Every structure is written in structure tokens, then in C-alpha cells.
Image (cartoon, rainbow, N blue to C red):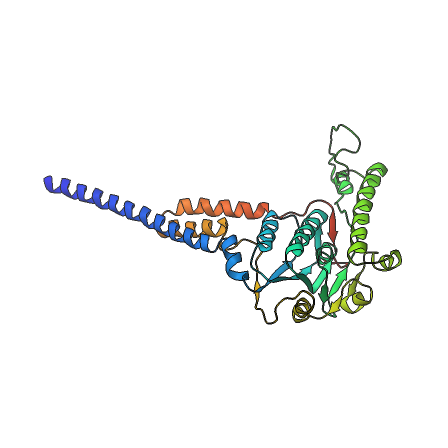
Length: 326
């Protein structure tokens, strides 16, 4: 009987020791990853990757409001980078997001010599981004322009009528939440939307006219919503030079007194190793490795929910899309 009691006590001690070392392993792993996170934090990464170099910034895909991007560009303002080359390949996005990015690049340009390279496409909001720079370089086959504003919304009123569904609503005034897509758009609602689009379009046109030094006649040639190839765009004053990154750097050397042969290093605008996403993932892996998988799954779920919340393209659009595109 005494022997059985000793075995039980030993097992309990062993279990406590195992739990202790599991917890200790997790804490050590998290501590080590935190140190790596600090070293590779946005501020630390900026110092490591841009000091004494030309920073390469990539703007790709749909442009929407992004506070992380604003803060990343603010860090770049105060970094040791000698200059900035902004590569753009974007069909645009929301007018608010494009304006935010334009303002961020304008502030950055006040601190660092900055040039834009159009890789494949700088249309609508992508072109708003490009004209923040004093010099725009594009390849001959690049597409630029699409100066215009769009407001789209689905209208399913005919479909609802077909299936016998009617949406009832009580609202404070006729134009509240109009158009709603559940009923035919009233002339008053269409007029209100038209005023919004025209006001944003006037802002876009004025920005292009000012930044590209165009007169009214020149502006009319390019402000009808079309895109132009790089070869066409240079004669229309939409860009300044045909070429690639080498041409852009040559312009910086010649016009902005940037030292020749400086290395060009990528500067990421989206958080990676130094953000909470990395730490969250690493912590999840560490917990999983020591048998605490349930906690790990909860951490991963929190990350996925945050990522899903970031997708959305609401509001007025400065966006170019070829006819028939998806």
C-alpha cells in the first residue's frame, strides 16, 4: 500500500515538473521571439534596411485607407535613406485611400528626394499616387491616367420583385441611405450621387492640372477617363520620362544630388516580422509544440478575424477596370 502511495506521489511530482517545463519553454520561446520582434520592429527594420541607401517602396493592387502604411511612410521620413523610389502597379481604389496615400508621399517628398516608377499600371487612384512625385518614369507599354471618379452599387429591385420580396423601411428623409439597391433609384438620389461624383472629379482634375503643370486645353485631352500608354503619356505631360528604375535613379543623381552607386533596398509598408501578426503566429506555434493546441487555435482565429476585417472597398472609387473584367 505504501509502495502505491509513493508511485502516485512520484507521478504527481513528474506531472508538475512537466507542466513547469512546458510553461518555461513557452515563456522562453515567447521571450526570444519578442527580442527578434523588437530588432525587426518597423522602427528597427527601417534603420537596418534604409540607412545609407535608396529606399524602394512598392504600391501594388487596390488602394484603400491604411493607417499602417501612413505610419510606415512617416518612419521612412525620419530614416537614414538618401532617397526614395516608389514603384506603382495599381488600378486605383477608393478616393479617400488614394488621397491619404498622396498626402503621405507628399510629406515624405518634403524630407527625401522622391521619384515614381510606373511598373505596369498607374490608373485612377494609382495615378493620384504617382503625381505626388515631381518626376514620373514609366515604361513604354505602361498604362497611366484614367482620370475620373466612379460610384457603383448593385440594384436588385427587379430580382426582389420577381421572387416576391419587398423591403420595408422607415427613414427620416427621402435621401437617407439612398440609393439602397432594393428599389429603383429616385431622380433626387441620382442627382445627389451625381453631385458627389462631380465634386470628387473636379478635385482630381485640379490636382492633375496643378501637379502636372497643364493648361485647360491639355487637361481636357487626358481627363475623360481613358488610360494611355507610356509612349502616349509623355507627349500628354502625364509622365516625364520613359524608362525603368535605373532611369529614375539617374534622375535622382543628376537633379537631387543623390550619391551615385548607392544600394537600393526594399522598404516594406506592410507589417511582417516586426508586427503583432508575426508574434501571434510564433506564439501559436510555440504553444502548439508543447501540447497547448486549444490556446493556439484561439490565437490563430483572432489573427484570421483581423485579416478578414481589413478587406473592404467602400465609398467613392477612383478605380480603373477594363470592360468585361472581373
